Amino acid sequence: MWKYELFSEVDGEWRWRLRADGMVLATSEETFGSRLEARREVVRIRAHAGAAKLPAAAGVDDVLGEVLERISRRDEEEQERRTSIAVLN
Image (cartoon, rainbow, N blue to C red):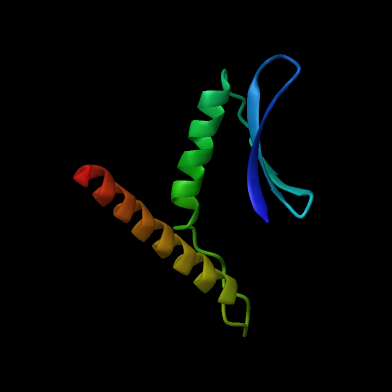
């Protein structure tokens, strides 16, 4: 399972990292002054990561890219549904 983590450096600055199956896949280069700022960056990254295109492998269909696009569309639909519900309440 992929998950984002927020962690504090020794100097009190915050960073995020992306983990999957115990491995660190990505870590923020930038440090943030608060946990909230680091979390906002994760939200921003998640919002735009689905739009990122993967390079096609020679002779291989980009199955992973298709799956990520479907997940992104599903997430957008879910967000729209939640916004609609919030407006109704």
